[in-house]
Amino acid sequence: MSDSFLSWKRHLFADMDWLNDIQPRAREFLSRLQDPATPDYFSYSLTGDIFSEHTRQNLAGSIFALKLFHLLGVTNPDLIADTTQRVLSFQSSDGTFADPFVLRKRRIRTFLGTLKRGQLPRSIDEDYIRAETRQAYAALWIHDRLPDFIPLSVTTDSHELTSYLSSLDWTNPWSAGSHLSHQLFFLTLLRNTGTIDETTYTQAVQTIQTFLTGIQQTNGSWYTGSPSARQRVNGAMKVLSGLTLIGAQAPDSKALIDLCLTNPAQAQHDACDQINQILVLRYANEWCGGTHRHKEIQAFCEKTLHEWSVYYHAQVGGFSFHRDAANRHYYGARVTRGLNEPDIHATVLFFWGLSLMKHLLPHPTLTAIPDILV
Image (tube, helix red, strand yellow):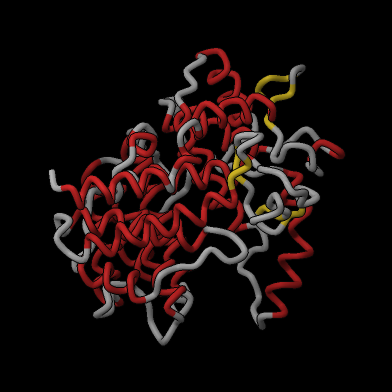
């Protein structure tokens, strides 16, 4: 091992000292979010929740707690079982999940926002319910706690699938890619739980992949029109989060790496763009065997980690969604006062980002964070 490599490694690790005790500190933070009287209830933020003032619903807190149990190595079977039951208590008869508090709080804001953009929503609640349903099932799946029967209605007909995907606005690939990813998630969920058979699943997945082939661009991403570079990268992330579920690879991983490194994401109001980009780089780098611009990828990761340290509240152990504030809105609903403190949503997101980054950058703390289904 060369002296120059050892020197680089010492410099790199010195700049990551804030990571050294991040998992045990985050476990302490998660414990502080628990209600002593109801241990399966987890606050969204440390002290600024609006949830706790008006309702004890807060489905998001329990979903994110289940994900953090996995990321942080929390193995208490009673706690996992109780939190699982709390999540399942929000399941509707059609198999979907939603928080009544969030539904109520987001409707006016969502309706006015779509009108302002000159759009009429297909359903004010539809996008939120699909996203929250995926979050809930992913959290249950991680702990092998899926219900025996999942009555979700998911089309598997090739014509209907193509029509649905074509109806999405692919000039906005971040949104359209999200819906495509949900479709692949739900199909895989239903196949794995025996609700649909392997032949039906394979045909539906092939239909989606054929559709994607028709809109893939030379830079590796999937869209139509001329979306911004940010949209192209974030849209690619959404598509990849679906393709990885079905064991598929992007046809041109090197082009995706070029797209990301030519348009490196910045941590501005929050770090979501960087986490999205890390996911694209993580899989594209694997698919090309780490042979394309790998040192540049690592340099991007180093810079990103330095910026993420600003979101980390070392004295408490969690991350805040914004540099100086907890997340205020969840799917358009106001859920916290936005105080300068960590929140459970950001803590899940950053740990997910770190679990992705471990495949790109060597560090013992990153290696200890397990991969997670999203």
